[in-house]
Image (cartoon, rainbow, N blue to C red; front, top):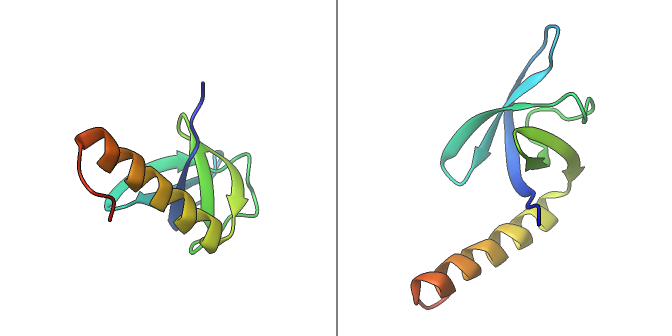
Length: 81
């Protein structure tokens, strides 16, 4: 099974390979944006294996992140936030 995780594009750098700084709840990673050339700073993207594979709206991103938080809390035996 593959998992794509939503993140917010914080900045974009051009060049031969278009890259972006993408934030995931306080963690920032450099992500390849070649598959989503329309993505700009402020957009949300789904990331899998270091590649942004699609753009999504903010509401969808927040909803998915909320589900992931609930899964993590359940795994740790905590109450969902």
